[in-house]
Every structure is written in C-alpha cells, then in structure tokens.
Length: 266
Image (cartoon, rainbow, N blue to C red; front, side, top):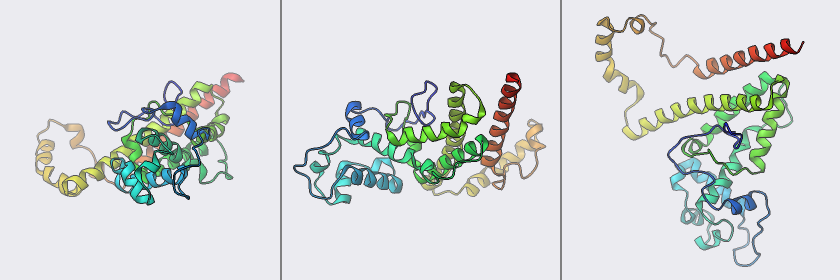
C-alpha cells in the first residue's frame, strides 16, 4: 500500500518494469475473471493459470528479464501466438504475476491468526521477507501503481484484520503496513544487491573488504574518525541479526503509540 493508499506493498523506485503499464482494463478483467477467452483455438490444457505459474517459475529461477512470450511458449509446449489468446502481453502478465505472489505470505497459515497486533506485525514482516527471498524479482519492479486483484486485496484484508487491535485510525494502520514493508524491503534489497555483486564480480564479500582493510586501518589510526575507531571489533559482524533488531524496535515504537492512544481514550 503506497502513501496514497493504492497498493498492497511499499512503493518501489526500482528501474525495472512498472506494474499497471499495460492495458489496465484488460489486466483487471483477467485478474477478476471477467475476461473469459473464446473456447476456440488454443490446445487443450492451456490456461491462464498455467501461463502465470510458468512465468513466475521462470522469473524465480532466472529473473524477470528471462520472462517472454517466446520463452513461456517453450516452457508450456505451445505456440507463442496461443499465449496471446489468454494475455495481451508481458505488461499485463506482470500484473497477474504480482497478484499471484502477493497473497502467498498470508496464505501459508490462514487458519492460525496471530494472538495480537504484535504477532500480526511479526508474521507480516517475516512473511514479506520470505516472499522476497523466494521471488527476488519483486525488488526489481516499480509497484507504485499496482493493478489490484483478489490475491492482493485478500492479503491486505488479512493484514488489516490483524492490526485492528491497535486502536489506530485507518490511515495510521496503512502507515504501519508501509513502515513494516519498507523496512523489510530495504533489508531484502541490501541482501539481494550483495548477492548480485558477488555473482557479477566473482569477488566474495570477505575478499572485497580484505582489499580495503589496509586503507581503513590507516584511516582509523589517523585520528580523523575517533567515533568509528573506538567501535567494537564485532560492530559489523554478520552474527548480529539486523532484521530481528529492526523489527523488534518497530514493534516497540508502535507499542508506545498504542499505549498513548489507549490512555487518551480513558
């Protein structure tokens, strides 16, 4: 959900393709099942669901740039033109792919609601992080104008249901979702960028920082950076769980607000 209340995930400024950039009316018809195709032409067994499933699988394995109608026709064993009977093009397909994966974090345990809003935030954050790990291509697309389908709305409905106990105003509840998703996406993007840097350069993180060590040590001994020079040796250790630390601080901060609102009402 963006700050104007239009999407279910934090807005991204990625340089990749943008959702909602195709035929919006056609995307909505396909998402909500109102755009039924003619029964003539395509081979039996081919369906919109199979096409979207194949597209997500290709994107998960090789990235969004690998997804094309030609590639999907190969994966599905059909002619490329047959796919266009179901979906107009890649822009509309991206809308369908996004809606498909957006509901996954909430579909994992639908019958096990969290005990309270703290548990709801915890589950939302962990589910979103896992979803971005499973579908890293999500970090490459601009979701500022997402075409909302049933899966995305269901995810938002469940998220808001878990947060109702906070007693906040509706715009503030959306603000909670934005804050949590933005934190998770920022951390996930940092991790994904680090992994991509290793893949592109062939240089491990350890080797990268080892190359800089002599220069950094001289800088610390120069006296120009006294605060950094005085920090503990394990300051940047990977053993410190930045996700857990940040998530718990977010929950603690919201807890202060919830208590203040409860006190003001009494």
